[in-house]
Length: 147
Image (cartoon, rainbow, N blue to C red; front, side):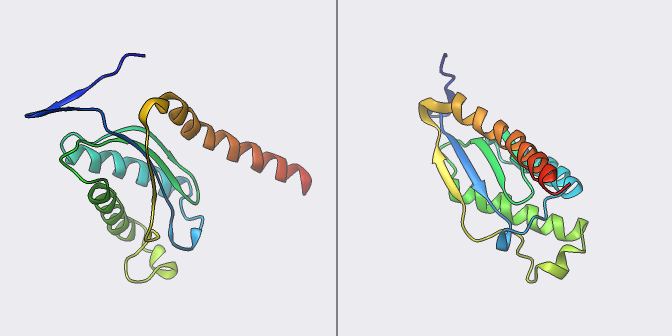
């Protein structure tokens, strides 16, 4: 696997992060329509920040996995705060029924999990993709138990 370094005016970098964040109270609000909106919004917002790129994205009903490439001129906390803040505001405008469950325009829980990708990028990207399949398999198994 060849390494692809990116350039800024005075630096070469390869900064990739695996980020996970959840809705408040871990409510399963990211159903199909909201999940599609969040997916599109996250791609749009990353396009607004120069150099920030989504390498892998998986929106589950109760959490979001993202593998991001973030240039060193941005702090990871700054980018995540931007993404969580803008998606929350947009979600309240697009889906007014969320206001019944969340007050104060806070969809996301305060924290998030971040890990630098390093040499295991391919393994982490597979894991992010695998999350969706695992949840589908669990739902199918639980459905069989209660039929």
